[in-house]
Length: 237
Ligand SMILES: NC(=O)c1ccc[n+]([C@@H]2O[C@H](COP(=O)([O-])OP(=O)(O)OC[C@H]3O[C@@H](n4cnc5c(N)ncnc54)[C@H](OP(=O)(O)O)[C@@H]3O)[C@@H](O)[C@H]2O)c1
Image (tube, rainbow, N blue to C red):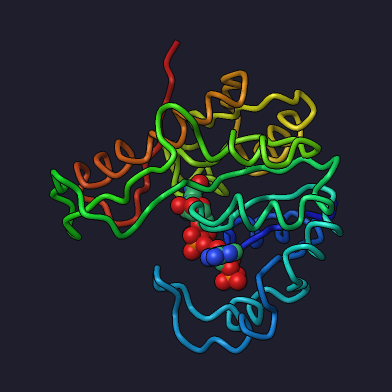
């Protein structure tokens, strides 16, 4: 299958490497191909310049966002959550009729919280929207002809693409959306990654809970004293 991954960050890189390994064709979307290839410094999260990543992953095509979306049979959104609605709206025509798996979190990284969190960096990114709306729903409203499924966000990306690295895969991944076929495509992709416990939460409104899980995810990470966040959530029933 042709999988388009919109984004060049660390999360997106995981969803490039794994489908490639599984034999899919992967097209990556970025704002400006030349600018992305010209970068020589690691990004904000310390990921090496994208040119180095491409050299290690031959066969990946780097394209403008719209061209990658147009070529993809399945599209994964890894655009920075704060800018995703605007960036995706600009390529709505190329995304029409397609499944878009959204794993972005609407983080505001720089803000002045009234009650800072005692994280190593003294702050937890703020969610906007939060509680009464979600990024997943905003994307769906902005792109009514696209079928949005929310998933992945409750785990580190390294665990999402390799679930058996934690508890031999005995933990739970969530999916939500208003289109059954889009959720099924997401579930099929997750199964190919190795997931066996995939819980369909129902309508896309459930993206709110998934996005709001991030502060708890961070709290667990610090509670465990882990840098990499190698843990999962298991819904026992
Ligand atoms: N496990 C998970 O589900 C998981 C893991 C990690 C991150 N996340 C979330 O997923 C999202 C992506 O994370 P990430 O770490 O992969 O990447 P990121 O660093 O948050 O975002 C990088 C991508 O956003 C694009 N971007 C940044 N500003 C933009 C703007 N103004 N207009 C259009 N595009 C813009 C960049 O475009 P260029 O390519 O042109 O630079 C790049 O492709 C975030 O919301 C993050 O919180 C989820």
